[in-house]
Amino acid sequence: MSGRPNLFRPSGHWRQVYPDNTNREAARKTLNIPPDCHVLLFLGYIDHYKNVPHLVQVFRELDPTNWILLVAGKLEVPELKSHISEAAGNDSRVKLKFRYIPDQDLQTYFRAASLVALPFQEILNSGSALLALSFDCPILVPEKGAMPEWQERVGQDWVKLYGGELTTEILESGLEWAIKEGRSPQPNLEKLEWSRLSQETIETYQQVLDFHS
Image 1 (tube, one colour):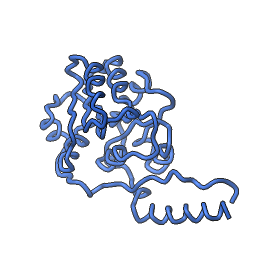
Image 2: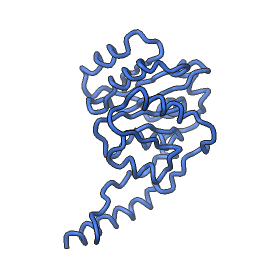
Image 3: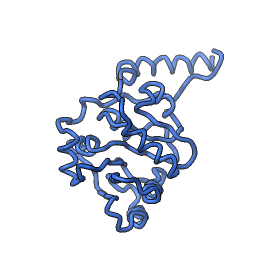
């Protein structure tokens, strides 16, 4: 081989694995989201490296028109609750739901969202990102780990990358990108099919063996 094998293999998508029988209008009504607002969503277990207080701070600094930030997920580190709540202040545009989201409710959050933002400080793969794409929601993610490969596989209309720390400029660009016209109704997740990825995993291990032989 001429170089090292690519070890950043993404996980398979979860389309049609979780309940998905709602639409955006019904989902937003369930979550008490005004019909004229877009939803920026963070959903997943909340830990330090996921950078949620910073996301809240940047969102409030940007103060985007007709957007609501919804943070939902179980706190892995209890003291983060106060940090996130302090960052949110009394801002009615920031909705915090610190609890485990059952499988049957995932559709409500993702179908309500216009964009999922995952400003992780470190990332290889992400279950939250895969879920978002499986529910046809575009994602804003750092240019780390497997994320560039995901963008290559799924397309720039569905995976937006950024370098460095999340800033108001990056978030503003992401919000504008998320609601632009011309995006297909669903991302093409054919390259994230489990059968395809399992074969690629086998090939990757073979490349590792060949590289070290």
